[in-house]
Image 1 (cartoon, rainbow, N blue to C red):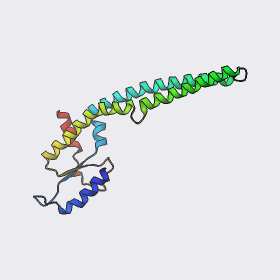
Image 2 (image 1 turned 60 degrees about the vertical axis):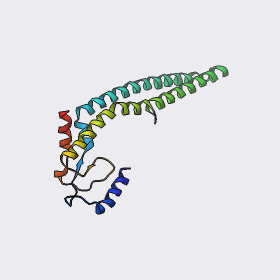
Image 3 (image 1 turned 180 degrees about the horizontal axis):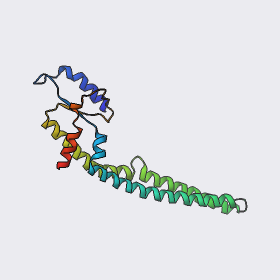
Image 4 (image 1 turned 90 degrees about the horizontal axis):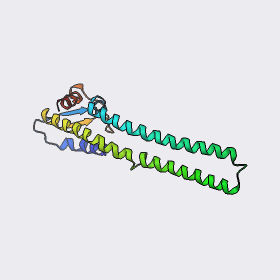
Length: 172
């Protein structure tokens, strides 16, 4: 998506009629902003706490399965066919529970992605608002993010507005 926007941007520039004849372009390093912005750090810590809790629970489930599997392996030769079948069914059920838990927490539509959206969206909105305000204040036509998919091969440091965004975020 960003690459498509960038290509369209490059095609539109020659046909753009800018009042002063030159475009003003700035760029930010969103990774740097997120690393230095206290709200983003707090949000990451909250997410990390959820991940740690879920990972601990997943480890418990896996350890329980491993213990039961090891016990089964030791005793399967002396088990009756019925007991062996029941134990194997229990192990399969535990494996399924582990898979379901992993998918529920870490899967494509899992709780991790929902929590990321819930916790990070307000932070991202603050950053985006600060970037828009700076674009207006500095009369910039475009602001690129050099840490994303759009490749920024060269930029003069004078156009880097990352520090301005961080300063703006501190004022709020």
